[in-house]
Length: 255
Image (cartoon, rainbow, N blue to C red):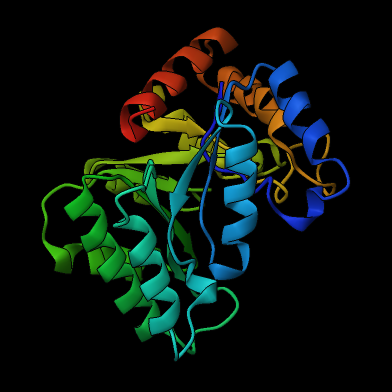
């Protein structure tokens, strides 16, 4: 299985990071993708990927909650890394729009997202989109780009069934994580209504641990729990969920 989105470089794993990597392998998670956040986390991300070159692949991007009025220096770092001759990134992310905590820098978030979308297109890389309380704004921005179709994943998808179908029509996959296991989660309806080929597995570790670990630190070893829930909703085997989602991730990210 492939965890298409985790932050095992986060400080939450400082006490047992190596053990968490081994637990993921023991659980059948063969590969984990590390998204970029901002310059404060780059060195930690790169150190982990270099320590376990067969277990991790990296993305690079400026996270929307790290966007401020003075975003240019941070964005310049991302551009330098993406366009470096030594770059081995599998995607541009995580990038997007986040209006959950603060709407102060919405215009700056839009500008930062558009530039990174253009870079991804120039580099032939998929995007990993973080969207929180901002689906209308995101779809408006994508319509304005007027590219016809897109390549990427809406990570930790949290939209409606209608928004899920709109995203898929535009070319995006949906990243499904621990939220699908929560009681009364609308994600079950989303998963039931879209093709398995449109779904990717992810944890977003250390955040959003699935039931029965909800409220605790999440980790990549819990990917099978998410796969089991998707299998139950779709009435297919866990092996089929593994096979289809891994194939989709492999093609999308060029793994």
